Each structure stands twice: as C-alpha cells, then as structure tokens.
Length: 174
Image (cartoon, rainbow, N blue to C red; front, side, top):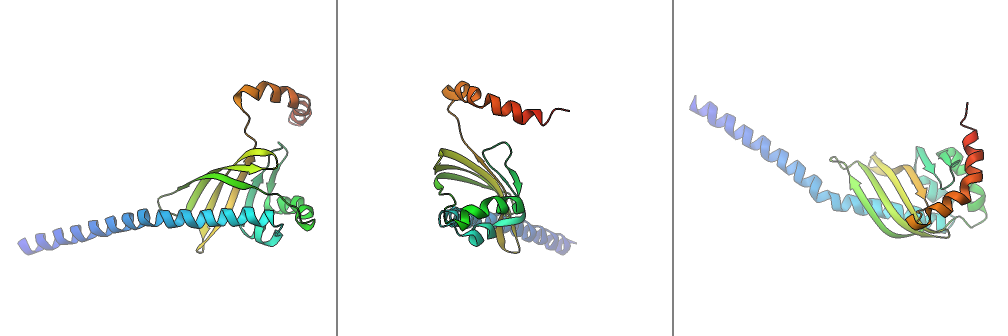
C-alpha cells in the first residue's frame, strides 16, 4: 500500500514538473516569438517601401483584412491587392517607418496582436493588427491603419470631414 502511495505521489510530482516546464518553455520562447513577429512586420513595411508586391502580400493570410484610413477602405486581401497593384507597379507604394511597436501573445504562442506607431507621408499614423502562426509560419490576418488626431484638434477635423461623412453615412440609411 505504501509503495502505491509513493508511486502515485512520484507520478503527481512528475506530471506537475512537466506542466511547469511547458509553461516555462512558453515564457522563454515569447522573446524569440516577438522577434519573429517584429522581423515579419519590418519586412512587410520594407516590401512596401521597395514596391515589392510579391513579398508584401506573401506576409498576409489568404483571408486577411486591411482597413485603411478612409471609412470606405475595408478590404479583403484580393481587394487590397487590386487597389495596391498600380502603386507597386509604378514603383512607389508607401514608406512607413516604425517608431514603436507593442506585441502581445496568447498562452500557446501561436496568436498575436500588436499596435505600432508609424512615421508616414501622412505624418504620424497608428497601425494595429492580428497575426496567426500556422504550419510554422506567421501571417497577418487583420491590419488597421489609422491617423491619430490630437484631442485639441478634433473639432477642426470633425468640421473638415462633415460634408463627406454626411454623404458616406447616407448609404447606411434605410
């Protein structure tokens, strides 16, 4: 009986230590996972700077979504490719330089979300997105580009876009 109890306790201890090792391994890998994601996002922005259409869109999942700064810009990958192709073909896509980036991971380390501050031709922009790792490769699933507006200037911006907002919003009225 005592031997069974000792065996059982050893088994419990072994299983507990395996669980701890797994959790610690995920913790240890978070830094390298974030570095992988940083590299992917930096390469993605660089591909746009270099007008490398194939490299740029290879980083996006087949079901990805890109939301631009205009309220009408909510594109699936195919729509975004069609919109972007003339810019890439002309050798002038866009040049976004990352000022800062925050990356967050789920417990398993196969799903990430991020936000980034960018220096662009539009001035300071903010990007945010979601990535998923499948078959040992990260892909951008969702990206949102926005133009931050200083709180002190919001009333001027509201006034400047009022007419176009009115036209745009009329398409949602039933």
